Length: 328
Image (cartoon, rainbow, N blue to C red; front, side, top):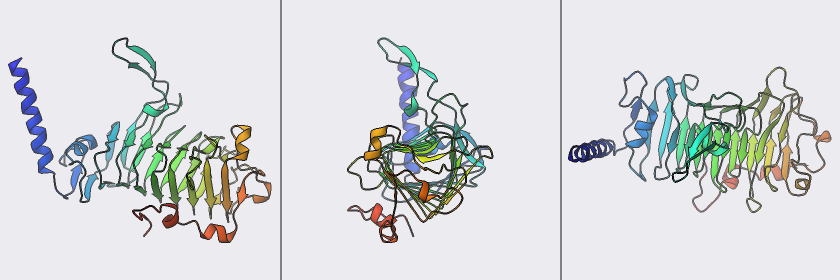
């Protein structure tokens, strides 16, 4: 027992010393081939100091990192930067029907469920991802989240988010997310949740006939999902895709200045439940392409006027006391 306690104490001491040595704004390098300080992203996360007041970069070299990651809420001001968006891949393969053991007194096996399936979960605020692929590469056996967010002021630049059903879950009401030059693909409801998120110059690819968004925006949240200057594409045999359906009554989604492919259904939107036609907030403005057919949209969606659209900017959408605006 004494030897065991000594080993535990020694291990804790080594971890504490390692964390202290990285308590600075220097860049940490992660490389699967051993050429960086760490071989896994999780190891690099572990040495970051809590509530850093400086910007720190975790640079991730090319490679496939099979890791199920959490960026905990006590971290902030970290940028995760990949060497190459196509060749720096963080991947895992959980899906909602994987059986796990729950409970201790009377342990039981049950399905994992949607919200445990993430590859990357961000609980922290002020986190940036650049040039990374985040993937859930499970078989199509149920919901399978690639990115799960809970933090505020999160930025994603030139990233790829790959999955099937439920690829991106923006999981916390009133949090603010900004996606720029990203690629997102999936099957059903593959961008879903209650957060306020702006997607700028992104490519959204539908892999099957289904629904792109499933916003669950709170009734008192002014904005939900906004797609601006985005391109909506699909696999060759996909030809019947809805822009969205409201996961909760007041789901908010807006597509403006977007190129909508021919796979977008003429009616555009689905109510999910009939009564949500009275509450869902579904809008478009100045879209183009074969899928932009405003005259055929469902009567309970809206086409904004130019004056209304000009009022919707990142600065206004994200305004709070902190005046956060991720757009340069």
